[in-house]
Amino acid sequence: MDYKLFDDYITLQALLKEVGIIQSGGAIKAFLAENQVYFNDELENRRGKKIRVGDVISIPAQEFTLTILEPSLDEKQQHQEEQAEKTRVANMVKEMNRNLKKTNIVSTKKIKNKQV
Image (cartoon, one colour):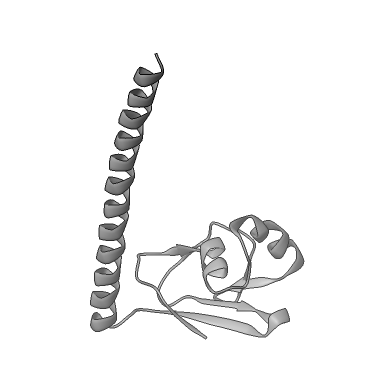
């Protein structure tokens, strides 16, 4: 299996979670205790091990091998556009939540003033 890395590195824990080998970051310790994971043909048990382009991760018990590749220029551009869109949407949601909070505060004050 190939994995295209868009950043400088990814930790072993994040990589295994992203490809679906483990369900959560907290599961990595137990997984590494029960399974042999190899990084470039050397046994690796550090969950924070930095994985970079060109590295190979293998888990013999699951007959799983993952090669880390560099994405093409088109893939990098598409990834950047997707990240920019996620940021734009997140900022819109934050602004909407701020406005909603302000509206709720004003409404609560009006209700309290009417009750007094």
